[in-house]
Length: 113
Image (cartoon, rainbow, N blue to C red; front, side):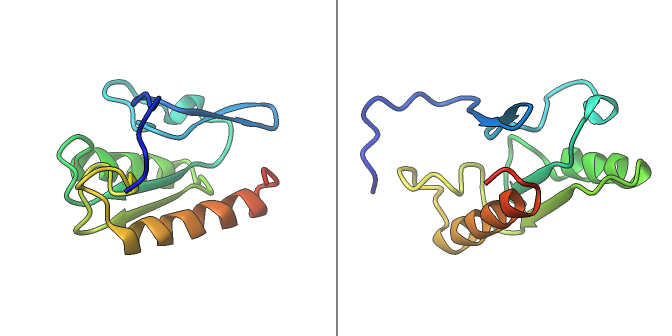
């Protein structure tokens, strides 16, 4: 388990070309962000997450499909919320590794990394 000293949970923003990229809690609780998106989105979600529901994920997928976005939404069917946090009981190593690989590939394809 990783050391959590100094860790602050919440939204994390990663500097990217032309701005910032939300990397945690990227699914909005209210409102529709699809009309204001300026770049494709990579969403990595847990299918067993009770905070970001499958209904919300499917709404996002449908909206992205409607605008023919090049976004990619991946749902790990049995993963709970925080499946990528190796300091929490919700950590799912296989899903986290797959998500990390997808993230690095996403950055490479979109000129971020």
